[in-house]
Length: 293
Image (cartoon, rainbow, N blue to C red; front, side, top):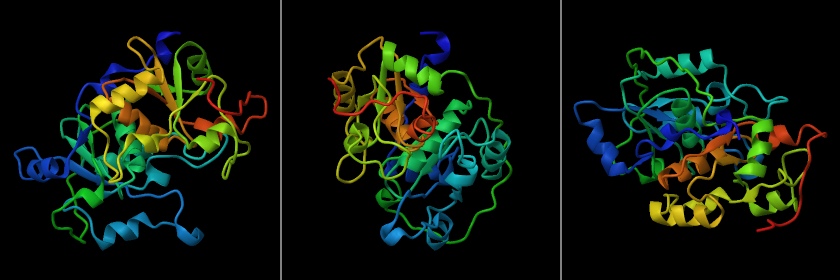
């Protein structure tokens, strides 16, 4: 495999998550982090739309700035998938407007699922920010007070400079499934093709290994211990020296699996277009049925 498809070690160069107690302590320290609220849900009961901005206005961690996943962490749905990469000028402006600077630590949280926060984490790390962590367990883990007023942070200086490492397109994902390990982070029934509630066709990228991201967390939504995660991924093929990649439905839950791999100390790349891009092209092969492993 060429170097461009090899995951970037910088994605696991630091502790990728932070506990609520650690965040509370850091917020009172000499170099407090910028806190981003990225609450988002793919679906909500009764088919209603989730309003993350309204949830933020109703109460958020003090000092947190709201970031919208659909418009600031992704661009409009299309041939590149349901959550393709954002325009970097839009993403950079959103980060600077939230107060993000290259030398300022960042903590991201969401409503507890961790998917949206992981998407923000991945984007910031991929575009060069050196110090980003996700609040383990999200807002439900926070035990401090909440506030309803929106802060007005000073403009940050962060300029996103994406690297080629840590990123997969469709061709690189297909190659990685043949020569390395490509994890499918969706639910097993979608991987097998038993059901497909969203995209054009069910199934998976040939050679991909089923590794549902919801198996990386406990009942409280917090990540399993690093050692347990490492054992899980190594049993699925992510052994020392193997190039590892992840995809999901649209590059959101897959980012959460990349984060879980980072917690386990395993660098991994993300196929951002994921199944929503792959399956949109009828010429791409589709595999169905259980994992051959």
